[in-house]
Each structure stands twice: as structure tokens, then as C-alpha cells.
Length: 94
Image: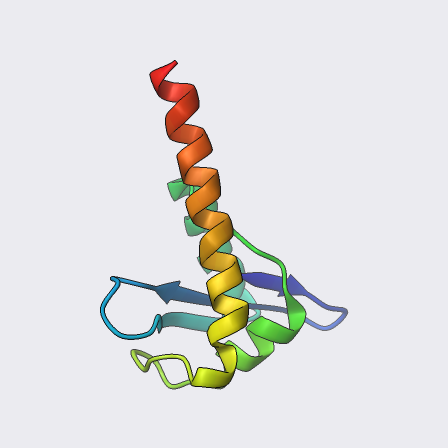
């Protein structure tokens, strides 16, 4: 996920392996955030712009699970990712 604001970019990356809650696996501001975005784009990883969520995620210690108050927002994001992946697979097999 990434957000652009007037001063800098902010990015946070999540990993969800279906055990426990999703974890913050990368985060950064400025040049590091821009590099994370470049890598995500090159790898075909979904980039979601959500200022409030990325601001919350950047506060979480690396490798830690997201707190319960973020479950709903992250679940909505994961649902979107799964729908996009399913649609992509449908197009490939057609």
C-alpha cells in the first residue's frame, strides 16, 4: 500500500499466510517508499492507496501482526486482492 502526500511517500507491505493475522513485512518513507513501490510494480504486486491505513501500518513494528482494530480494513483489502486474482485467473484460462 502506498500514499502520496505533499511532503513524501509512505509505503507499507503486508504478508498474509493464512495463519494468524497479516504481518507488516516492509515499511518506509521517502526514497525507501519509492523503491518499495517500484519493486512492487515490477513484481505485479497490488498497490493500494489508503492514507489512513498506511499511516497506521507504518507504526507497527516489522514482522508483527496487525492489531485487531485494523482487521476490518485489511480484510477488505485482502478481499479485493483475492477478487482481482480470481478475475485474472479466469481471463488466463479462457
